[in-house]
Image (cartoon, rainbow, N blue to C red; front, side, top):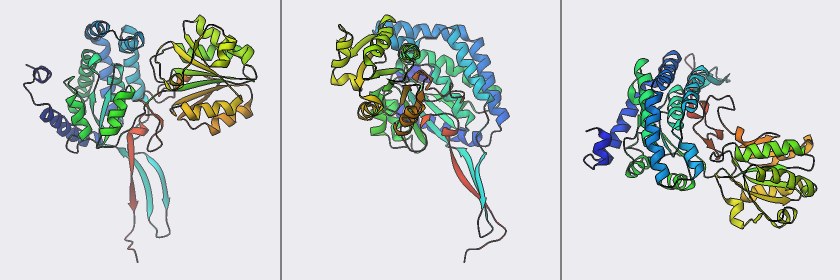
Length: 430
């Protein structure tokens, strides 16, 4: 009987198993700290090859998850997050290859200078150590998170959602194959072998000091639990309440294309737009055009009083709609008094994730980009670009909306910290 089977049948102690994962991760982290780039990249490339070679096994595992998810009545957006096919597996493999091509941040010099005492000071990037990542639904996170952590010199303990358990195990097997092929410890990427929520509780306690950082990636309930109960530092965000603001100087055809893509390209990701704001100066023409394009594409519209007058028949938006992350083909629409009105609405209801302004006026755009206090701001581009891969970071673990350590896409550099290396020639301090 495997460890996972013993855990599921209650014949193995979860707390003891989790402590074992922590001990193994700490040991692996020591080896990764000094592993050369060539070896880490070789592990990622071998894992990518394994993903492609074992795609049938991964698809079979994913079918088990999909069948169970459909039986449980998961939404279409959640099923889309969970589903794998040949194209998505190839995209995961390409993501690992892209990470391998990125510069290795470990050991790089961030800054250096000399001081009056003759000392030479260097600030150098180093790994964080051991990272715990708790996530839901999307099995590709298993590969992205594992690869990013290893490239940044960290060991990682992954706890995927129960709905993606089989898919994550199949992908994890490929990552382990890559580590072994490159001569790195298999324990550098470990997957929690149970769906029991008690395992999450053990991670929140820190695994007897083994964890240096926790990263939650999922819905509000998960993130709130992690941020409330964790005894180790947490890097994460609560909601992706993303806004698209159509200014009076917007190109309406551009606004239609951007808004439809921002909302509907993939409704289940955190960068999907949830609210459309339209400048009252052009609302009479712009709102029916842009919201109409969304409606024609299959999106449900919920509008404020002004929006309802311009588009009779749409549903009335409630107070809850302005603070709801739908993750579905639904969008709230409001008419606002110009850019200041848009900024005020976002400040009141937003989650400091991603916002977009559509305008041909550079002065207005600069005002929005300067005064809006969110992690990612876009001018004339879809909020769906809020993604580490699209930022040229290879991949990401998530979008951080806090203001300490990391903000926006969490990629390689955000998974490191730094230390100071000071060189002297016998100086003593008077």
